[in-house]
Image (cartoon, rainbow, N blue to C red):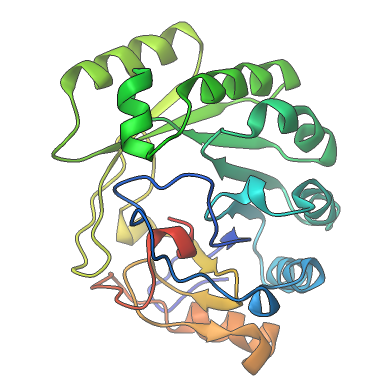
Amino acid sequence: MYDKFNRNIRYLRISVTDRCNLRCRYCMPAEGVKTIPHQEVLRFEEIVEVVERAVDLGFDKFRITGGEPLVRKGIVDLVAMIANVQGVKDLSMTTNGQLLEAMALPLKEAGLHRVNISLDTLDATRYAYLTRGGSVDSVLKGIEAAQLAGFAPIKINCVLNETTILGDKEELKAFCDHNNLQLRFIHEMKLETGVFYPVEGGKGGVCALCDRIRLTANGDLVPCLMSDMGYNIRELGVESALLQAIGDKPKTGHHNKRNAFYNIGG
C-alpha cells in the first residue's frame, strides 16, 4: 500500500516484548526500566491478526524484534503462526544471540527465513562491558547454530558510536568475511533529538526509501521510528490502525520522546 509520498509500505517490524536479557549501554539503562505490564502485551492471536490484515493491504515482509524476542515465552510457536499466514514472503528476526544456539534449528523449522544478530565486538571483556554482562561466546555459538540450521543470509548488526574502537570494526569485518556473514554498521541514533543516519551495508535510515511501520508489544502501530505518533490496534481496531499509521507516515522523522529502542524494536 502506498503512502501519501508514494512509498510502497510493505514491511512491518513486530516488537513482541520490551524485555531483554542484556542491558546494552546504548539501548537501556542499567536498572529502572519501566516495562509494559504483562496484561497489556499483545497475545499471539492479536499479533497474527495484525499480520493477516497487513497482508491484505499489501505487506509481505515481517521482522520479529524486541527487546529480545527470544525471551518471549512460546516465540517458536509465534514464528510458526506468522509463517503460516498466506502472503508472508519474508519473515526474519533480530536477536542479540544469547539464546540462539538452542533455538536456531526450532526457529528455522517453524518457518523463520533469516536472522540479524547484534554484535559490536569480538573481545569478550569489552562485549561484557558494552552489554553489562553478556557472553560473546554465546553469540558466536548462536551464529554457528544459525549457519548449521540453514539460515542465509545471516546479517551482523554493529552499532557505532563515540566509544567504538577501530580494532573492533576491523576484527568484525575480517570475521564476517571469513564466515560468509553480512556486516552492517548502524550509527547510534538518538530518538529524543531525531538524530539518525543511513545504515552502512543496509537500506535503513533513508527516509525517501522507507517502506516500514512498527508494531509495539502493547499494540501501537508506529509510522516512523523518529515520530511520537502511534495508533493502538485495541482502541482503533486493526485495519483502522494500519490505515492511519500508513496514511500519517511523515516524509521524514523528527524525534520520538514517547518510545525507547528497547520497546520499539529499533
